[in-house]
Amino acid sequence: MRQLSVKRNTIWRLQKMKKASLSSLKENNAALIFECLRNNGPMTRANIARQTNLMPSTVSYITNFLIQKNVIREIGSEEVERVGKKGVLLDVNYDDFLFIGYDVGTAYSRVIVSDGKGNLHYSQKFKTKTGEQLLQQIFDNIRNIIDKYNVTGIGMAFPGFVDYERGVVIRAHNLEIKELEIKKIIKKEFKLTAYVDHNTIMMARDLLINNSSKEKDFVVVNIGPGIGVGIVSNERIIRGYKNAAGELGHITVNSEGRLCNCGKRGCLETESSSKGIVKNYAELSGKNFECEEDCESLAIYQLAKKGDQNAVKAFERAGHYLGIGISALVNILNPEKVYIAGGVAYGWEFLKDAVEKSYKENMFYANRDTKIEVSQIGDYITALGAATFAFEKYIKEEIIA
Picture 1 (cartoon, helix red, strand yellow):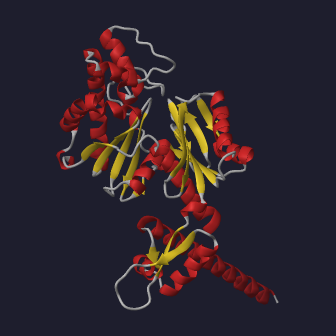
Picture 2 (cartoon, one colour):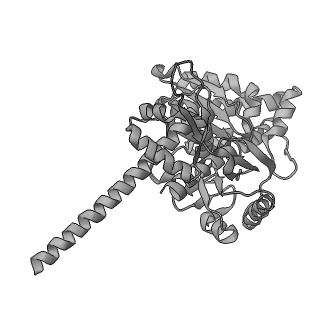
Picture 3 (tube, rainbow, N blue to C red):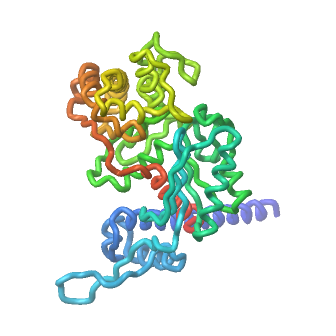
C-alpha cells in the first residue's frame, strides 16, 4: 500500500513538472516572437518561423495566443510580386498600450506618455524637488497624467543605487533620499505597476532600441550633477553584481581633489559634472559664483560663448578629467562607441578638445578605433527608455506569463 502511494505521488509530481515545463516553454516562445516583431517590424508567420527557428505550427499557435491577448494584430497582406497566396503581416499592437516614462533627474525631471513604439503623446520638463518634497512632486505629476490618459503602467528612472527587482531606490544622495520603496508606493497610491531602474540603464535601453547605427557594444556617459554610465555588451545591458555597474562618477581621478558627496575625495563627479564645472569657474575666476536655485554649468557655458576665458578653462579642466575617466572605461570594456549625453553635453564644443587629448594620452592602443560621439536622441531619452522598459516588462510579466 505504501509503495502504491509513493508511486502515485511520483506520477503526480512528474505531471506537475510537465505542465510547468510546457507553460514555461509557451511563455518563452511567446516572448521570443514578441521580441522578434519588436526588433524587425511587421512580419508574416512564415518569416517569424525562419527568424526564430520555431516550427510553423508553434508560430501559428503562439501568434494566435498573442492576438487573443491583444499583444499583436494582423495588419494586412505582405507586398510581394510572387504568384500565390500572400502572407498575412503581423505587428505589435502598440496603439492600445500607453505608459508613463518618469525620469527623476538630479536637477530636472522629465515625464512623458508614450506608446510602446516610442511615440510621444505628452511631455513635460521641470525642476526636481528633493527629500520629502520629491514624493509629492511625483504624485502630482502622475495624477495630472492619469486624469487625461488611460495609462497601463509606469517606468521610472532614478540616479544613485537602485534595486530594480524590488523597485527600491536604496540611495540617491543628490536627491536626499534613502530606501524609497517607490514601486510599492506607486501601486498603493495609483493601482499602477511601476517598473524602476537606474537612469543610465534606461538611457542605454532607449539607445539600444532606437540607435540607427546599431552598435552591439557601446556605453552612454550621462553627465549632469552626477556622472553615470549605461553599458551595453553584445546588445545586452550590463548591470553588475548588485546592479551597481557604471558608477564612473566615483572613480578617483584627482587624489588631492575636492570632497565628493559620497564621502571620497577626487571623484570624477567633483571635476567634470555640472556642479564640478561651476566650481572650476569659481576657483579660476576668484568669484563666488551664484545662480538661481541650483548652480548649473549652463550658466558657465553661456559665459564661455561670450568669450569669458575662465569659463572656457572651466570646461577644459572638466574635459581633461573626463577624458581620463572615459579612457579607463574604454580600456576595461572595449566598446565600439562612447555616447555622451546629459545636461553637460550642450557644452561639448568646449569639452571636446580636452577630452580627446587626455583620452588619447591614457587609452590603450587596441582601443584606438573606439569613437566618442554626442548622442542626438534628445532631451527625453531616459524617460522614453523608462516607458519602453515598462511596456516590455508589462507584456512579458503581466500578459504572457
